[in-house]
Image (tube, rainbow, N blue to C red; front, side, top):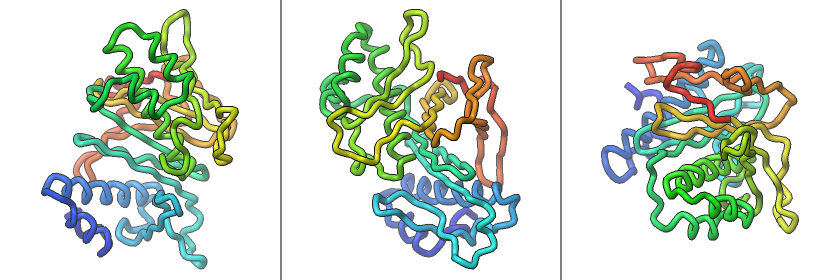
Length: 258
């Protein structure tokens, strides 16, 4: 069923994956992108008819033909996946980056060793001051997820915007290390001229098992997180294409962190 939605090149890529689980994940990922994009056109565009391209850093984008009447939908999308979950983010008019990570993901090396290799000195210092190993691990995953979302929103990925060239600041509130309003700070010696601070973030827990970070360009939208609502006009759906489609924003399945 899902395979029929994919283009020949997508099918070839999916079937080249090593193992049935990876193949199924690749097929479901592309089907999710296509069906979700179709929904945002009020189903006026068939999921099978979308064409895609990649920018020079490998970020997928919709390929609209110059004479295509569907240009009335200025859609941007991004996708992220773990072994147990796939997330697809869609926006209108503005770039988006999304990343999900399992909260229990165990890094191959010591947390601070990884942080010193990939993060900025200020982020390493932040993590080093957390005495509890479990709390330190959670904050590391949060930072990684936010940084991934940011470089994906930039359209450059890790290679085009290395993590150690910018800092994510998790603002403390009432003496508690809690992500209230993540801010992007460019290091003074950064050689990457693509970095900027005009971005908004949302950080949430999904089913108490994953962290999800979303980054979009800041167009001065209000972020009304003080009353528990998700910022950025964010809606979260639990979806299995053609089988399940449930709005879970505001439910126990989605816990807003910032």
